[in-house]
Length: 108
Image (cartoon, rainbow, N blue to C red):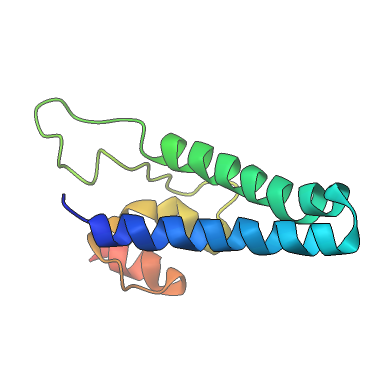
């Protein structure tokens, strides 16, 4: 999509994050600090969020691949509705809706 500035900014931020972490670890004289408090948490969070994003969006409608009601999972009356995640499709349909207003927005 030609969003090269975003790629540059993201890459610069990542280099800065890892460089500062490595410098702190070097200054403390321990690579363990860098691994335990900088690198591992970032890799764990990225992996976890990547899996979650895939699971929420792994289905699609062949006849209408842009159908947001099929391309994101919506679980009605689920057992674990933390932050109204059961109304996930609302965040695609209306990104500015606060999580507490999602059930009302879904019904409209």
